[in-house]
Each structure stands twice: as structure tokens, then as C-alpha cells.
Image (tube, rainbow, N blue to C red):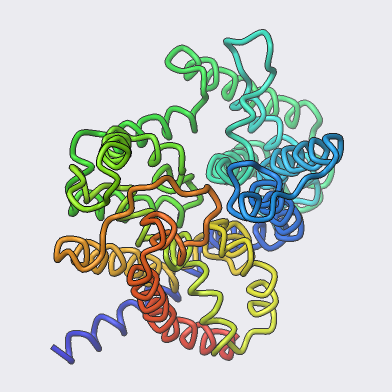
Length: 421
């Protein structure tokens, strides 16, 4: 058994090296690091907006902060603007970095990527909104990545094909225009075709399908919940928005509503019709270490990491991560396309949910039944959701401690990688 583990670790390390060496992975990680200052600002402002100024926010319900309406609205609008700019900039950067070692006029490729990305998110059905704004921001990163890579590939293979080093600098305007024109027409066709199926764009279509699956009849099945959570984590690794972490989809599921009605009628948590649901298992236990275990990872980094940059990212991101906002970690560390951290980000939620389900089934602690404020720290969700059950809080702290220890070996492995660079 030990020999098999050693072989697996060796093969996995080789895979990490090969994966990180892919040109596209390097381009995406470089783009993420370039975007990080803007993501940092957007994430902190969004955390303040949702946690302190939103009536559904955890800290708002404790401290009741009130800002003049003008300032509160301005802050909210600034978050939206930054959110839009981040995904647009991602499309530009990926196209720009994809082609920069091949030609000097990479600005044109980057701008063409931006135009193509905007076309994909144009609202072809509505006369009120020009763009599908819900598809921008970090949830739109995967589409921005694909768009930039596709545009860069087309320019490299067809527009700049068979040109000398000198002619690449002075490439024929007609050929360049023809390439841009074909890309624009192609993306208009794709965007218009998708609009015939849905008004929410490509990402909306994907999220709608995933949400329908997640809110299906079998979400009281523990194995299916774990499977859906695992799929969600893999989606986040690729930069695809994970519908499992969207509170509205979980909080207003049929099973949760039935549980809430039961509690209102009987004034007790024990005997709830559905003790095992996405809300009682994933919300309450899967997120104890933060979304994808990001909070536990940041603390592990602060304890054992040798990277000053990763420690700085963790310092900046630890408070938003405490309120279930993992954007700073996913972009700044980054967790997106970081194969070294994919195993612990899968293991941590699964471990937490298995322990949580066991505690509930053995009637050691009750399942959460009360609705939880949106930005409630993961480690407190059991305590709040059970109306102040102290045993639930103690187990949450113990589970969170184990989460940190799960991440520590992988952080040490990251230290070794930095030493070899």
C-alpha cells in the first residue's frame, strides 16, 4: 500500500510539472497575476458591500451599519464596474499574451479578443440591456480565457501564417482586417445562435443546466451531494462559476423550505423531514474551511509557506474568505489552474461533509434548520443555523483545524516548487 502511494505521488508530481509547463496554463496564470490588483480591490469592496451594508449580510445584522444612500449606491456601482472590467481585461490579456512572442502588434489581437467576448455577452433578445451583465466578472473568466485563446490561435495560424520576421511587423492591412472581420462574424453567429435557446448567454445556459441538475429530486442523497460538490470544485478550478456555492439556489430549495416550515410548526430541530440536503451538508460543513477550503489554505500558507507573495495574498484575502468570498485566493495564489492544490480542495469539502453527515445521522448534533445570513463565516454556519448549538460550534472548530492540516503538506510541496524555480 505504501509503495502504491509513493508511485502515485511520483506520478502526480510529474503530472504537475507537465501541466504547469503547458503554454496555455502559463498564459492564464500570467493573466491572473496581472488582473490581481483589480480583483483584490473588487473583492474587498464587494465584501464590505455584502457583509456590512447589505441587510442580508452577517455583519450588518450584528452592527447595523448605515451609510448615506449615495455612498452605498456608489460603492455598489463601483463593484459592478470593476466586475465587468475584470473579465473584459482577462479576454484582452489572454489574447495579448498568446500572441506576444510571435508578433509585435499583439494589441490588435487583444482588442479583437475583447470585441469577441463582448459579442458573446450581447443581449440579442432585450431592447433594454445591451449586455448580459450577470455573465461578467469572475464567473465570466472561463469564457474570457477561451475567447482570448481562440482569437490568438486564429491570428497565429491564419493571419500571420507564412510571414517572415520583417513582414510580421508590417503585415498587410487587408489580411489583418479580413482576420478581424471573420472573427467578429463568427462570434456574432455563435452569440445569436445561443440567444435562440436562452436569453442568458453561453454561461447562463451552462449555469442553468448545472443548477437544474443540482436542484433535482435526489439532493437529499449524501453521495449525490458529494458528487455535485466535487463537480463544482472542478468547475471552479477551471474558472467556471460553481452554482453549488450560490446561496440563493441552496437556501430556497424545496427541501430547505419544508424543513423551515417544520421548525416553525414544532419549534424544534430534531425530526426534520430532510436532515441531509445541500443546505445542511454543503453549506454547513462543506464550507467550514471557506469556499473550496480557501480560508484553511490561506491559514496553512501563513503557517508554513516560504513565499512572501502568497503570504501577502493570504493576509489580504483572509477576511473576505472568512465570509465565503474566495476570489482573492483563486486569482491571487492562484487556485485557478493550480494543479498542486486541486487534491486538497477536493478532499477538504468531502471530508467535512462526511463528518457532518455522520454527526447528524448519529444524532450527536442537529442539522441546521434556520436560514443563515449570506456572508456568515463558514465556521459559524452550524452555530447560527442551529440557533446557537455549542456542540455544533466545537465540532466546526475541530473540522476546520483538520482542514488546515490537510493543506499543510501541499503548501510545503509548493515551497519546494518555488525553490527549484
